[in-house]
Image 1 (tube, rainbow, N blue to C red):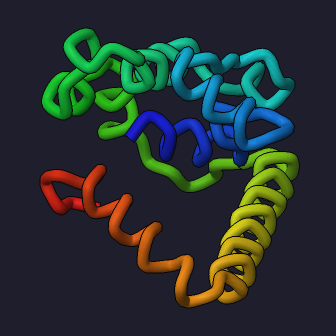
Image 2 (image 1 turned 180 degrees about the horizontal axis):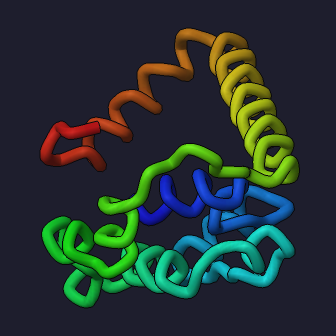
Length: 136
């Protein structure tokens, strides 16, 4: 939920990087920041909620009930959203993010389609061995 809220507020994912390896390292470290200009417009309460939702250690992370009762959520429950403005940067960030995800998906599909059938079965077997509970 924290990742979704981060993207909705800023238009970018919280765990960036120039390469997949760098992104994964940042996810594992829990490394993100509110230092881009778009965050200057976002309240401290919203940032606090996102920080609690993005807590790396699951036992320290805020629960769904705690998130629902967070002060920022309670403020939003009582607001009327008639004249809400969203910075242009958020929309362009989202468009760029969506485009990059689509490009990655297309690239992976192309690579997968080029793997010879005789090489796919060992990969499937290895994956099945790793996925012990069958949840994908």
